[in-house]
Image (tube, rainbow, N blue to C red):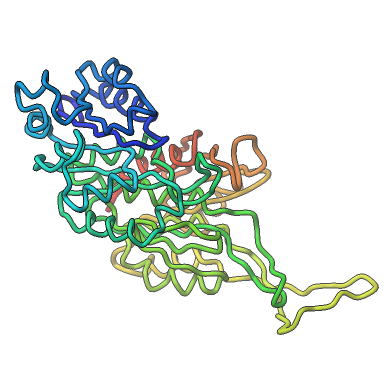
Length: 400
C-alpha cells in the first residue's frame, strides 16, 4: 500500500523523537520514499545524519538552507510529498501548526503542503490534558485533511503514567497507510468494553479484579487509527486523559450492560474485552460494615452476563455486528474459551492465560489465542498494541 508513496516526515523536539528512526526505516521497508524535516529542538534528541542514513535522502534542518533554497527547499518538500507525518507532535509544535505559524523547516513545509497530514502527539500527560493543548487539538481535528493518532496511554519517560506516549510503530504505520485509503475501517462503528467492574460491599469496599483496561484501550486505539468511529464503555481504571474517541464511564456490571444494550445494535463490531465481575453482594450496606470477632459469611449473587445478553439481543435482529469476546483463564484456557464462544454465539473469542509470563492484567505485553467460530485458531504475542493490530487484521477480513 505504501509502495512508491512519497512521505514527508516532520520530527519535533521531544524525547520520543528517537523513535522517528524506526518509523522512517519501516516506511522504506514497505516501499515508501521518505524525506525528513526537523525542528531545531528535534536535533537535540536524534541527529540529522541518523535520519539521513535511514531515509537515504538529505534532511531539511534549516528554514533557509542555501543548498536547498536553490530549489526553494521549504516549498519543494511540500510540493514533492504525497503525505506529511509529524512525530512527535509536541505541545509547542501542535500550537504552532494550529495557529498557522511557519518559523522552522517543519511548520513552513506544512503550511505549503496541500495533502493529508498525520500528527502523532507525544508529551507529558499534564501537558496533554491542558485546556490550551486540547483547544489546539480540537482546531486541528476540525481540519478535514488533518488526522491524529494517539497519544497512547501508559508510563512516560518522566515517570508519570497516563496519556502522552507516542503511538507504537504498528499504529503509526497503520495510520499512515490510512491516509491513502481513507482508513481500512473507515465508516465502521466499533463498540468496545474495557477495564474492570466494581461491585460495592459497603461505601468503602468492593469486589473487583486487577484489570487496567490496557488491552481494550489498545484495541480501541488500533480501530481509531484505521478510521473507525469508536465508542469505549470503560470501567474504573483511573484517569486516562483526553482520548480521540467517545468514552462512556461505568462502574458496575449493571451499568456496563445499560451502556452497551442501546449501542450494540448500531455497531459493526462489538469487542467485549472488559473484565466483568461475575458476582456481587446480595445486600449492600449503606454504612461501613464493622468486623466481628469470629468467621463471617458473605452472600453473593450473579451479575448480568453482558456479552451473552448483548449477543442474544443482536442475534434476533436482521443485522448484527461481528461479536468478539475475551476469555481470561488460568487453566484449560482453550477449552473454556471454546465453550464461551459456542454458548454466547460469538464470531471470535480471544483466549488469554492470565497466569502466563508476558500475559495477563496490568502488563504491556500479551499472549493470546484468537479462536473463530469457523474453527480457526491463531496465536498472537507482542505488546498489547501489536496484539490489538493483529486482532484487527483478523476482524477486517469479516467486516460487515
